[in-house]
Length: 279
Length: 302
Image (cartoon, rainbow over all chains, first blue to last red; front, side, top):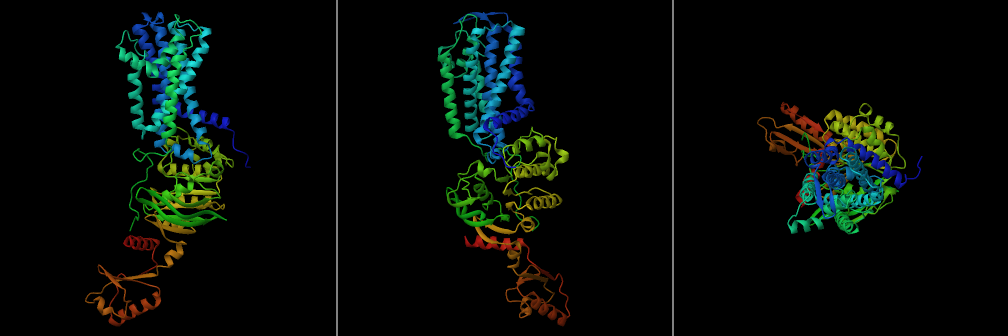
């Protein structure tokens, strides 16, 4: 009756299955992660889609620019924003604490959580590119696909690590969610995701270059930009993204907590009641 | 071999000694209750034994492991029912029992466990839609799904109404009848009386008394009380009631280890004087009285 423990891959796949199940049953998470970038893609294309865009790399259409930029943004939402929201919620609820009390190795749980976000990110990017190809005439060049995949992997792993860093540094789900949005939304505006900045102030340009989102979005955009020759690998930018990922991983490793914070609103928190009722 | 051995356990937070030199043993198959106020150190002690919390000093052995260093071999053999541990709201009950159960070697079939805790009708319901009592049943289900040798129950019925508590007690007794060792924390004294073979009383991080519920209660003697008849003072009763009798409001109360003799003397005196002793009561002290006196004594000592 007592066999061995299930193997790690089996356990991770099971975690991914169950965590995906919880994700698709959370309408808010589904909306912000997948649906909102799609809505933005449709809107931006309706507004600027036909215009041409001049960039350092050459001239291309806004449609292609937005497909790649918003695909990158979707990948970031699915990993960074999603983890910074969901993991602290699970901690506040005491779900992380419960898992830590089971024989499941903690790294297996975390690997399951990360892999779940990679699956969501991949689905979001595929939807975005699918829409781009079908509705906005985006052309994917086979020779650039390896660069596209590598960029995607470096991006999602790095942004997932940064999401875990926010989850580790913030005490409660409410604060982590706020911090994640405060980081990601302004950054998106200076990172060629929502708007293509034409001759921005140099300091803003530099700031965008050293923050992780712009290098990631631009590396992604290069793989769709017809003016960029294959294979379109962008090691310099990917190095910046990866460096942020390493920093995130170190912060998460140092500060990640499994215990609910006392400041957090736990639904099942012990009620303060008289010790000796009826006396 | 004892399932749990604790020697001089200390847990300090700065200057605060949450647990201050606690020692006890729990035998295999025994149900042991740690009883105390909120803040007495019960949950801290239990969380150290579960491996959730580190200790400042002391020796702890649980199922042969040091829980501070133990890995999954250890966690495979324990079940934890914590107040502060939640379950993913979006999962259905059956899914939750399945996924949590899947990481134990001696996992029980999810359906069987769900029936056992009486959640059969809710098996397909989302965890987020369960009532408080149903959630506690799910907690129990997740605690036993791995067939644990040792089950930690942290205040299993806090927040229950009286009927639900009785149901929970009979459920817990049923679950424990298979020889599972149980470490229970509670601040309900009747809960300890109903469930535990032995009770340890924690006050301000110290174990101030230990024994079977009966021995703790029995050690306190029998309590006798009655209303002071009109026109009679305590001085008039000298020689009739023990010297340590005290007047509390209108009532005279004393504790005795020879209730037959003392009550006979008292009623004899009343019959002789032709007075009725209103509100005469001869009571076995409840565990609550014992607990209060221990708690008071220890507070005075500080």
